[in-house]
Each structure stands twice: as C-alpha cells, then as structure tokens.
Image (cartoon, rainbow, N blue to C red; front, side, top):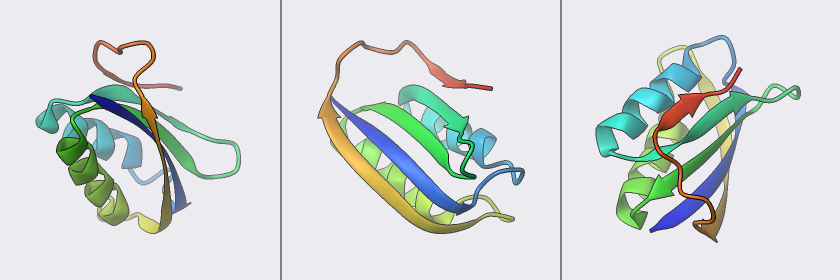
Length: 90
C-alpha cells in the first residue's frame, strides 16, 4: 500500500472537481482526502494499491467536464496514518 499526495493546477475550483475525485476514488476503493487551496489549486492525499492510485491520477488529469487541468504533481510516500474513507475538506 502506498500514499500519493497530488497538487492539481488549472481550473479546478468551483467546477465539481472535489466531488468528481471523491466519486472516482470511492469507485476504485481508495481512501483519502481532498481540499481546495488558497492559490486556486486542489490537493489530494490518497492511499491504496499503486495500480489503483495511478488510475485515479489519470482521472485527475482529465477532471470533470468544466475543469481544465494544466498539471498534476505527484509525491509518492509510504503510508503513515491509515485513513478510513475518502473525505472532502472545507
């Protein structure tokens, strides 16, 4: 099991991006958290098996219909504290 921290740049706030990622993560059986950042980006921490994490990264690169993702920065780590579900932080 691994943990990825993603920083997603582009038009990713106010377009349903966090809900889109939560839906895809839940479908893939991943756990984590997602939140909007003051700089207009979105950050995500996800935990799971590497092939499933990579699938979610691909979904993040596309995003929902009204988003426009310009880059996804990935930081790969070992899992520290195991998360229980996937949440959207306010």
